[in-house]
Structures are given as C-alpha cells and as structure tokens.
Picture 1 (cartoon, rainbow, N blue to C red):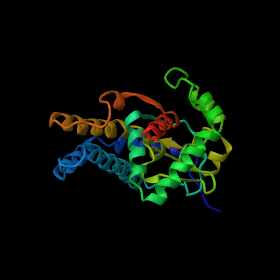
Picture 2 (picture 1 turned 135 degrees about the vertical axis):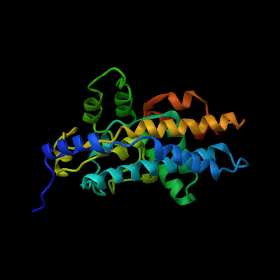
Picture 3 (picture 1 turned 90 degrees about the vertical axis):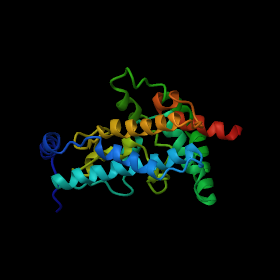
Length: 251
C-alpha cells in the first residue's frame, strides 16, 4: 500500500522550505529582461503582454518544481482530480482579459469549443454565480467555505473529463495550491489541512507583469486595456470572464 505524507510531515516540510528554500524575485526580473530582448515594437502590445503572461506562468511552475526537488516531494494531484476546481479563484481584470485573448488565438475548432463551453456554463450557473460572486472576499473571513459549499465549478472545468479547458493559462491560485498527502483528503473535506499554497510567488509574478507594462508605457506604447485599473482591480474569475464574454459579443 502506498505511503502518503501525513499532515505533520507536511508541516515539517513547510518549515524547511521557509527556512532554506524561499525564492526571491531574481528569476522573474531576469525573465522580463529576456522578453524585452526579443521584443518587436511593431507587434501589438497586447500580443507581447500575452506572451509575457504565458512565460511568467510557466516560470511559477518551474520555480515550484525547484522547491519540490530541494525538499524531495512530489504532488499527489493527478489529471481528472478536480476537487480544487470549485474553490473561489480571484484574479485581476487584466488576467481575465489575457485568458480571453489566449482563447481567441486558439485554432478555430478549439476556440469555438471553449467559447461554447463558457456560454453554456454562464447560462446553466447564472443563479448560483450571482450568489457566490456576491460574497465579499475582502471582508468575509469565511468566504472560501461559503463559496465552495455551493459547489460551483470553475468556468474552465470540463465536467465530462474533470480537466481544464485552458490548462496553459490556468491562473496562479490553481498553480500554487498543491497536495502532497493522500489525494483522498481533498474528497473528504472542502478545505483540507494537508495541501499548501506557494502563494508568495504571486507577488513576484504580478510585480514582473506590472513592470513590463510600465516599460511599454514609458516607451510610448498604447495599451489595449485600462491601466492601472485593469491591473489592480480584483474580482472572482467567473464574474470577470462573464464581463469579457459579453464585451466580445458586442463587438
């Protein structure tokens, strides 16, 4: 029978990470420098920002992997396990816009599939979405439990396969929340104790993305979104995506 890490084991590993393996923003600063070395100012700024967005998300994954190697752990999360896909995901307006931009650049058949999926999702979940998206995540300390208890899935979760429709651009909360214990704990509890989050990467990632945008502005580029509003306005991902879907219909 496979032996999984227990809660006490995971706490010790967290302490080890905090003491010896916390990263800094160096890799993110370096990534921005690399991206600007390849920058073609004849291309639309949004295309460049989308590329940076994808690269920074990949960098978060690789930095987490480095930490895992250092402390000799591997996630027990597996394809088809979607318990955490019912968590409240909070993002910025810009991140939602970039996800939609990514979708619109997909091959036609794949793009139409995702857009139809979103259309059906918002039609099917309209009532419950109004309830969960009205929970104040800035003030209500129990917002996660209240949101999860409604069991409203992520807009990008394919309920037939329990997989993500846009895995490459899944947001930071999805990438940084990982389980190293028995996978069963996620089925037994809405918010189990065993998984932990590498949420400290969010600051580095957002700082790098913001610096890149400021550099574009300094160089006189006109942006296809509202700055700084879109970078610093947060909301639940379903609410932001629905706004973007509606905007695209009006175009």
